[in-house]
Length: 73
Image (cartoon, rainbow, N blue to C red; front, top):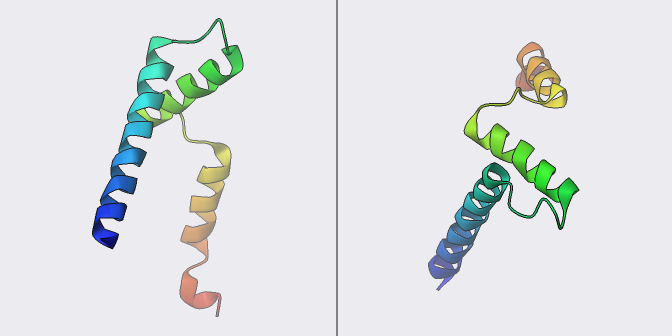
C-alpha cells in the first residue's frame, strides 16, 4: 500500500512539472494571470536548461565546494 501512494505522488509530481513546462512555453493564461504566466515561463526555461542558474544556487554550490562536509564537524 505505501508503494502505491509513493507511485501516485511521483506521478502527480511528474504531471505538475509537465504542466508547468507546457503552460510556461505556450504562454497559456497570459491574459488572466500575467505574473503567474511569466513565472511559469521562467521555470520552464530553467527546467529545459535554457536559462542561467540563479545566483543563490551558484553561490551555494561554490560554498559547498570550498567547505567539505567533514570540515564542518
